[in-house]
Image (cartoon, rainbow, N blue to C red; front, side, top):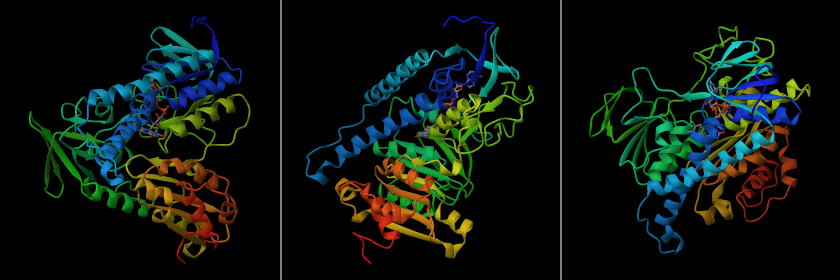
Length: 461
Ligand SMILES: Cc1cc2nc3c(=O)[nH]c(=O)nc-3n(C[C@H](O)[C@H](O)[C@H](O)COP(=O)(O)OP(=O)(O)OC[C@H]3O[C@@H](n4cnc5c(N)ncnc54)[C@H](O)[C@@H]3O)c2cc1C
């Protein structure tokens, strides 16, 4: 890692999360000399405090549910309890192995990792302590942090996802503030671990960014799982003492719980990093870019959660790869948010890509849109797993599929094909020609598109 400190890199990247390290690796593959500045751990939110640890918890939750429900399948099991130290060991083991792998990749790519807190001090310079790391191009990839609400201080019984991931006990009761992707994920985990969970959401429905039918199905499933939720209700404040946290709502109601999880979204990490001083436009902390991910300052790019739009790790990866290729002069195709697959991870899962039904009707007109909703009740593998839900596919009349949403256990795994269908602008008639292996949940995609193409198979006319 010893480098000449006067070296000018081709690319200096500020932040080693999904966006930053993907950019570093792709740039290095393209023969560019890369410095990657990271103040914490390579891998960022996704690996250490986001995607990976939460999915490990969800898998442990699924195992707990299977043990609890063994009888349903004729298997004698009982759930004796959750050993959080064992769960954390399993989770941390996965994160640790992936982290090691990532460090190995950084060194194999000969990326110069500069450890420490960086600050943009000129359009071509990131300063880390005494060291000025200079580059012909600079990529801002400082990511995001868990936001709170004004007057709601994090500490004690009031947590964000960061602290929730390190709990060494299962709370008896939790209030989750926010019914978005992160809120429903933790609600699902804690319920499977045996906690009493109540979600409070100001918007009229859970996961309000998704197709309304998906919210309804999730709410139905959560009711069945005895996850309580209050939608269309505003939170007004919380106090805590040694026994509980007391949450008050605008409708006058109060809720008491062991813990309050604040899951009200993620804000951009840009404060104090010198962006504005160097002339980079910043809007509510985010760094807006053009479609080629260029900021308003020449040769300064931004990627990932810092750029307004969907906050997803695979968007960060795609941004990072795009910028590396742009700098290398490969003229890559822009990353368009509307084509990015989305998964809400909880039980049941929601998978979606493209437009919701309401967006499609608004975009193309009510009479120019056709929708088919296939019920997973007709899908053998879903029956075997004991899950309910649906696959909904949305096409322009006589045109391509423009939207997809599915709800059901494990349906997140189906988003890959849906993403190809929407992004390749496939017609249902084309998808209907492709075979889907039997018996898989994947067949439900085939069935939905066959039906939309006018040749339904396992469907009542
Ligand atoms: C609980 C949770 C679950 C999630 N689950 C999913 C999921 O299942 N799927 C999905 O796609 N997305 C998920 N996400 C979102 C995903 O984690 C983010 O979209 C992704 O990490 C964004 O990548 P990024 O590179 O933009 O930022 P980050 O991952 O936040 O990385 C930014 C990096 O910059 C570093 N940094 C910041 N400032 C400085 C500085 N001044 N100097 C040096 N380094 C600095 C930080 O330490 C960090 O490592 C989840 C997020 C959370 C919180």
